[in-house]
Every structure is written in structure tokens, then in C-alpha cells.
Image (tube, rainbow, N blue to C red; front, side):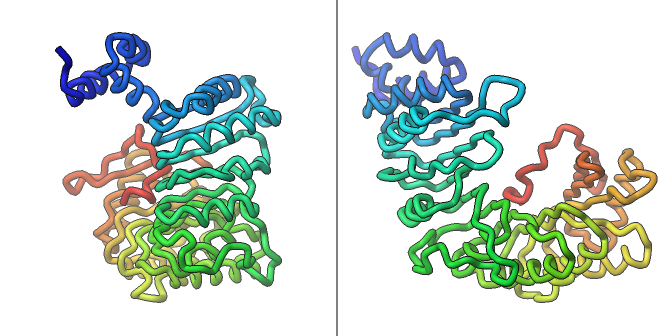
Length: 369
């Protein structure tokens, strides 16, 4: 007597943590094969050159299996201590391209290649028919990538590791379609070049952005800041999270950044997350810093660099004291990340008590608040 399909699916989900059990389940019956294969191939995380080629070869030769994949992550680097020297050969890209063409129901795609510079291989996305919601891309931005993105009307979460740098006097190179149908649902943008944010945010419902300054000279960085904030103000939605990294953090420039962000009450009325800012050591300057923070009435999470402090405020008593001081002026804050020389300390407010969470992962807080 055949079991109902829902029962087979529930059994497959119950043993989903064991790949070997799922493989064995495929041999029980046709019904269990369908449920087990769906559990096996629904989400694939491919790490390593040989594994990627092997699995992608299966997907390219077996359309029935490829159509089960809805989330695919490819992290490829040479299996050695020096991953930066890894350079995939042409055959690797071809088999990956063929596999991507077969995964018609893919909704999440993450491509990361630890090869130093991003690979110039966005042509692997040509002829792909899937409609993504999430796309994290470690490929060079070129016409192939721009053309692919123009076919993704449902994409809401985008990370791009590469973007053409513009001349200093022109912050937004006109290399993306100006049509309103280009990424119309984009709401989360992470990019390592601020030029990408300047180009992609205006006219789209982006409400969370993570980027970094690409200029180093102060005057050029001020112009870059104005270009970034001007672009963010042209989003179709109010911002909830802004995370702008810098190669050189200073209290003076952080004050300028915070002043620029908070100067428009309508722009920052819904902000829940701001980072990364330098917390001034000087008491008078810190009071001015807090005064600007008071304009962010819905702020929930703040990332602060305290590398200039001596002694370092990294022990529990100091972290708690700074958090309590901060909340005197901005009581809506419930999470603070303190950064000291790349070491991160997260403090959460629990029942009005500051608790240091040593095991917390802080990379995606800007996505979550």
C-alpha cells in the first residue's frame, strides 16, 4: 500500500540531516525516491573544485534533478593553504554554465571564488531561465552580468563584489539600464564599491545597504559621502539600515558622516541600524556625537569603532558602562557592536541589563534589525 506523498515528504524531512540516509531512502520506492531527491537537491552548498565539477555534471546531465534545486551556493578555491592562487580552468566554467542553465527553479544563488580578483566569467549566466530572489555574486561586473540582472524582476537581495570604478568627478557610471523595470524589487544591496550603491539605489525600493568608501583623500571622500547619501535619499523606500565601511576610521569624519545622515529627518526616521562610526574619546565631542544620535528615534543597533581608546574598553565593565552611557541619549538602542582593532564585541540589552554575547555573529545584523 502506497503512502500519501505528504507522509513521504515528512519522513524525508525528518532524516534530512543525514545525506547517507536520504540516499538509502531513494532505493525504498518510487515515492520515497521523489521525496528524498527533493530533500537532497533542494539546497546545495558546493565547496571545492572537484566537488563542484562532479555535482554540476550531474545537474547538467539530469534535468529532472536540476529542476529540484532552489538554492545553490558555490564556494570554490584550491584545496591548499594558499587559496589565492586558485584559477579554475575553462572546463570548470563550462560545466558550471551548463548546470546553471538546467536549474530552472533556482531562487537563491551564491557564487564565491577565492581567486584574488573576481573572475571575468559572468557569461556563465547567459541563457539562464531562473528567477532569483537572492543573488550574491563574486564575478566581474560586465555586460553579461548587467544583461542577466535585467532579466530578474523578482530579485530583492543582491551582493556584488565588483563594479567599474568611475572617474573621481563622476560617481555614477551609466552602465546599467535606466529603465524602471531593471531590478524593480531590489530592497537589500551589499557592494564593495560605493559606485554600485550610487548607481543602483535611486528609483528602487532599497531600504538596507552595506558598502564602503573607495576614496582615501579627505576632500574626495567628502564628495563620495555626499554622492552616496544623495543616492540613498532617492530610494523609493525609507532606509532601515546603513553600513558604510572605511579603510581609515577617524572620529572627525564619522562626525561628518553622522551629521550628513541625520540632517534630513524624513530620510532617517526609520533607521534601525547605523555603522560603522568612530566613538569619540573626547567627552565634549562625544556629547555632540550623542546629540546627533538622538535624531534617530528608532535606532536599534549601532556599530562603533573604539580602536583609538586607551586603555581599550574591551572588558565587560567598560563595555557595559559605554552602553549605559549611550542609552542615556538613545534609549531605543538594544544592540551595540564595539570594534577594537578588528576584534568585535557585541552587547545586548536584556531586561535593562547590558549582556556581552561572546558567541554572537555580527556580520548580518544590518540585514536583521
